[in-house]
Length: 81
Image 1 (cartoon, rainbow, N blue to C red):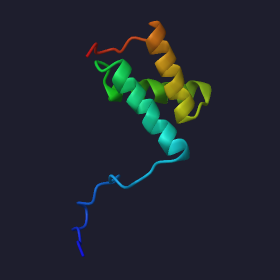
Image 2 (image 1 turned 135 degrees about the vertical axis):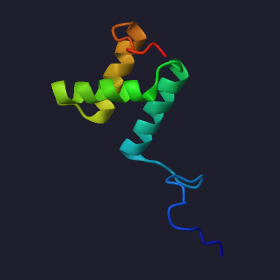
Image 3 (image 1 turned 90 degrees about the horizontal axis):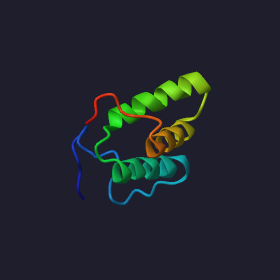
Image 4 (image 1 turned 30 degrees about the vertical axis):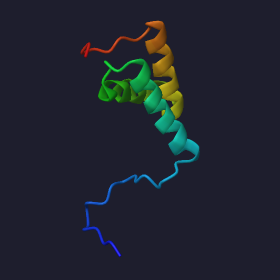
């Protein structure tokens, strides 16, 4: 039997199957990374957070809006990297 020390266990292992909203968020994150690798995830999260506050959206809805804006050129990351 393998016992891992406290604090070393990864949050998601290879045997974890995401479902529902967790799976949708993981797919949204993957979509961003594949379509716009130069955009930092921190910038995406900041814009999604801003939209959530202004428009009362869920995280998944806000990520969808950010992706749509990014793909149409309506939103450009501030740092450019």
